Every structure is written in C-alpha cells, then in structure tokens.
Length: 136
Image (cartoon, rainbow, N blue to C red; front, side, top):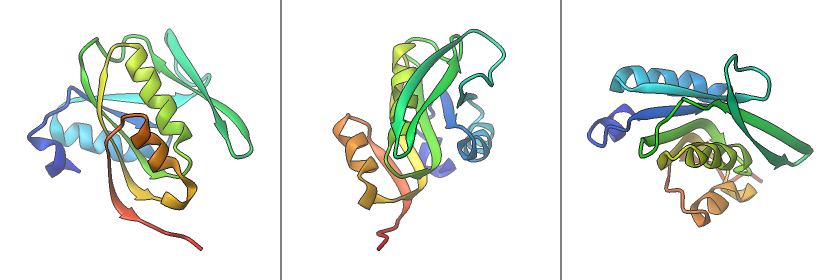
C-alpha cells in the first residue's frame, strides 16, 4: 500500500473501525500524512458527523470528527475487507459531506460474491485490493 500511494501522496488516510485503523495508521505514518479514524457511533470525543448504513443483520452508524478533513483534501479510505460494501460506502459519504475527495478505497481482501466491490465501483469509488476471494 505504501508504494501505491507514495507518488499520489494523499492528504490523509481514513481508516474504518477497527481493523482499518491498524492498516491505515501505519500507512499514514509511512506516507507522513494525517490519519482519520472513522468509528462506530459514540466512540469519538469531539463534534462528529454520522452516517448510518444497512448490514445483513440490521443497521449500524459510523462517525467522524467534523474537523478531520478540509474541503478538497484527497483521501484514501482503507479497511481490511470489502464484503457488502456498506461500511466503506458510509465512510465515503462522510468524507464527501465534509468536502474531501476520496481518491480510492483500499482493502486487503475483496469478497466479490457479496457484491460490495461492485456497488462501490458503481458509486464512483475506485478500488484497490490485494486479494480477491471467491467463496463457495
């Protein structure tokens, strides 16, 4: 991931709760850019914006600090896995509501059978994943 974004140098890396924090914080450190945590509702200590999304078994809400990004910031959104795409789509919407440009979504694993990566691409989010796993 570091080599992929070294030349494009985003303003920040946004990591999705919680495994995206592990990958995203290391990536942000290596690129010497900011890290933006997108957390489950109620976990952040400052003024936040929130976005709800549907899961296979209900719904969830994620939040981000209102001052985490500035209009025009180029941001990479990262998580460990893309399944249905709901969490990443919610993160994308949060970042865009604050004026950031999500230049790419990234994950270690894509589970294309669940349709998330297709939905994200159809919503205009370029994706980069290391492994695509067709499960049966």
